[in-house]
Picture: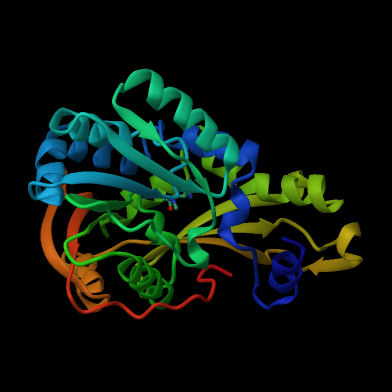
Length: 323
Ligand code: AVJ
């Protein structure tokens, strides 16, 4: 954390990595975001699962039993629709949620085992960006990896490609990946989703500075920064920034650093890439996956793609993909 923060704040323009959002307070704010009227992503993806879970699970299983792995599982809320569909087809389902947050995984395990009998939860506290190792499938078993919720949207296109290659390298031919991506759409809808009327996304962004104050002894004055969301059409991404309202100096005692801001200077805190139709399928194909099927919600805001591991392996790259 210390090295990422000092690298980002010493750069011009200044930036901070978006994984820093998710401390306990930030994870809670993110859960609130998913319930906002403007944040259509979670609702759109959940609507797809509500309608298509059976079909998705049947296509992935292809007559065998499934073992389900979820990358960046968090609270695993929408996943329950897929898990229920899987236990309808087989008596028990092993579900391995992978996340860096042990507390989120504990809560998810407790809730899923209570609410969906037949699911055996085997949580893994791991950073999947460092590469991925999976247990080999038992005879008559296939793996389904879930990477849903537009989590891939935080990665630069080259990083996203590398991550998909790493997933492919961990799979055997016939295993499957279910990928959820947000689709490019009109600017007003996108901006509202990342700058909601209740100000929850602003709090989520500002929590980053509060976190640096708490954990690195920084003295950011939260009232002299504001939240800004921008649609970058050239790169097809929403950007989040923190804007300094005045000329100021901030000290970060744990890093023994002082950082100067001019008025209006920004810290770039997140990119959230929005895919055009067909783009996720192209990414998957170039990482060694075979096209399966794509589902979208009624308003075509969000897409879920099922892809099968082909015989050509993706190139495994152990290097961390989100700096
Ligand atoms: C968790 C990366 C999917 O990009 O929409 C929500 C994070 N940032 N509001 C997204 C987020 C601002 C979210 N992802």
